[in-house]
Length: 188
Image 1 (cartoon, rainbow, N blue to C red):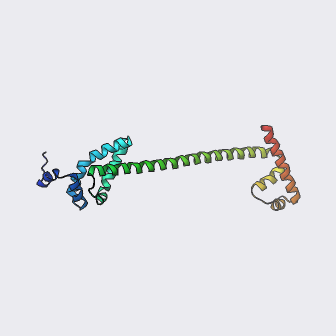
Image 2: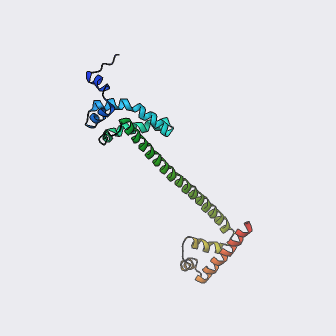
Image 3: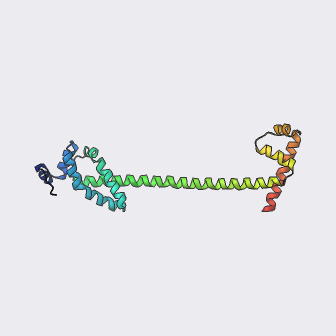
């Protein structure tokens, strides 16, 4: 199949990039298509050199070309279009690197936070397991009293529930702490 070009296409191939850019900025879709066809490979090749990654460079070049219609409105023609596009590519690459760096720092922070959280969970579970085992070694009256206090019951409420005086609750809690401490020290 042979591609037929209309006379305007042939003429536009002789037109400078800068003239195509001005026409594209004024809404000429044909000029825009021809311009992108001319510059895409250069933008992509430069992006590959900047990023060192073909996939990243392709994404970058496509993003630049997608934003080009709006950016062309700010093109003043003071520099060659390719120079201007290289500047846009450098800025876009820097933005990408900054976002990636920020994301990596955030991810690192979350990773550290998650590791710390998992360590706390493990430590709390170990303490809970130890306490559960240690409580079984206490007498029933000490275990009943301490378990109520650990559940957030006040000494007065524990006294009422166990039908003992508040002083006895306080003594049992103190005695349980001494015995639990002695058990912990014996393990060390």
